[in-house]
Length: 89
View 1 (spheres, rainbow, N blue to C red):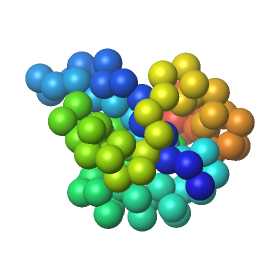
View 2 (view 1 turned 45 degrees about the vertical axis):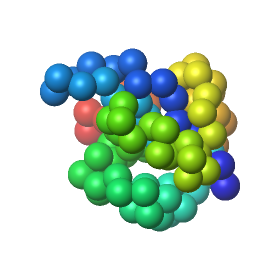
View 3 (view 1 turned 180 degrees about the vertical axis):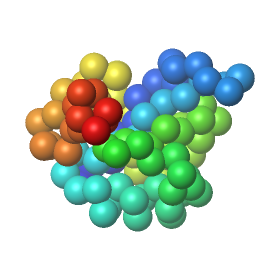
View 4 (view 1 turned 90 degrees about the vertical axis):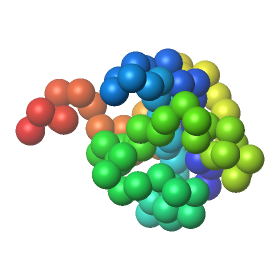
């Protein structure tokens, strides 16, 4: 399994946020997030929203830092991606 994290570019709640995903398995993603202090409420169907101040800790813990487009490409290739139109259901 590879856990991927992108750059914190998404503003919300007075902070910048990044995305944490797996390119193979959601259970292992949940285990990784839990082990690194990311709360379950941060999970959004196929990724975790993580605050900017957590990114360095996640990378030090084994997450691979990739650009956002690479993260999305690999998430789609994994078959784990939840499309925007499916999020509304």
